[in-house]
Length: 225
Image (cartoon, rainbow, N blue to C red; front, side):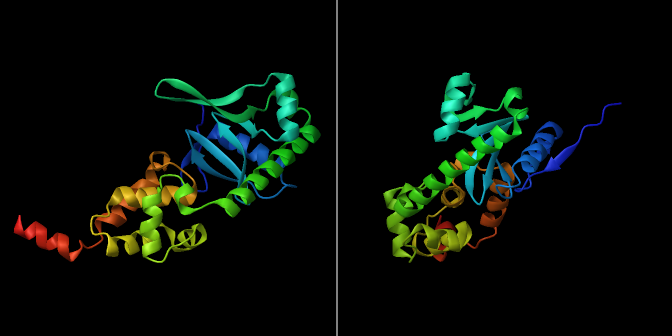
């Protein structure tokens, strides 16, 4: 009888055993670079070290983000790019599949992973320096203005408050602030489009949302109608 194993990732999402085994391989191989964390993303798992996304796990396959050195290597090898389908069309990401030849050369794989991590950290630092609230996923200039009005004037402040406390501040000022805004704030903070939020996260946010008391103006309107 074949035994199927299920495991839980950092966000509480169930992972299949093949992906778990591959994650264990990556963690062991790259332990000199730091602690590898994962979260669900686009039907796979984003791999990060100190919040810098350097790789992806999809259907048990490991993909490395293209860095300066790794991009040249993968281009020379004609390696497969990571892709997903959107509205019936393939979207290619700047991540390349790690094949058996590279797995069998752990020294080179660690070197390329370090290059990918360096590139990810540089991008992260640049975005943090330049990023405004309106530049986050799901958020617009109007959201930025609304958040400014309630004292949340930069990305770091938004992240320190978190989606729920930020939403409560907005709700106090904007009575029609609904659950979609809550999802948008959470996605902005974790770097995801709201539609890509894990189902468990959306469920927890919705359950919290419905427990919040209605604004007085809305309550009065509902009684009148």
